[in-house]
Picture 1 (spheres, one colour):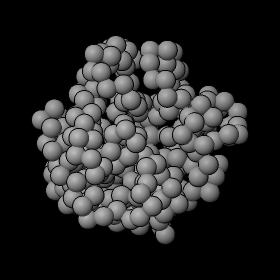
Picture 2 (tube, helix red, strand yellow; picture 1 turned 30 degrees about the vertical axis):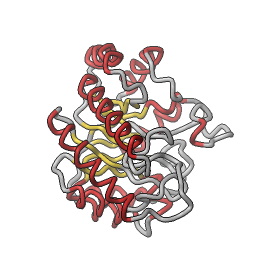
Picture 3 (cartoon, rainbow, N blue to C red; picture 1 turned 120 degrees about the vertical axis):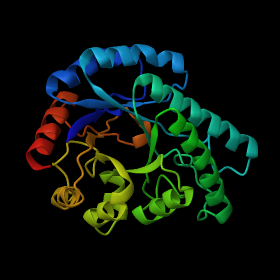
Picture 4 (tube, rainbow, N blue to C red; picture 1 turned 60 degrees about the vertical axis):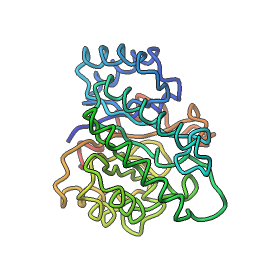
Length: 274
């Protein structure tokens, strides 16, 4: 396994001020980091690649789209702008030295119409993701799409829905990542969901039900790890934990003692159980 840490634990200011954090992550025994791509200016990622290379840290890029960039918007100009924005995120991933761009960028985070996704919205997602997949493939990047829970997304919020979307896109560079936090809300069985996605699964985020220390909540980790063994998964297990520093997560109370404590105990749990 490759053990990773998502940098959103330290908030959304993803800049060179986090370089000491990268050193700490390396010293703690992690193999790599998930780097959020919110800044889609490719020029700003060369320094990150250099630092990660110096530390010997592997890296995965992750991005999201907010209400200003919605790939399933009825506004054609917004759909086009979103596709271009996501292509820039692919460019940034390439410069970063990542070979995977993960996240729920199939649609806008926490943007709702008050209705289920329409066939037209679905078709727009498929069309745009197919073009993005080809662009990413040309750059040597694989897309790892993520489903969120019903409170954060209405296009896809389950393994079944995301599986259908990926198969409708039908491109070899369009794959799936699995996040235990969202699955813990939406699935009857985390293990069954993992086994269902096995053919397309390229990345796993491990996140506790309260977004804090892995192994201290109510996620059925035995079910998760058994399923990963069943499908012979040997990729990343990347810890995604949040704090008050990430306003969009709506965490307004302290969930752990320190970032250091959370990382140390979560990593030890994974190494002892996965």
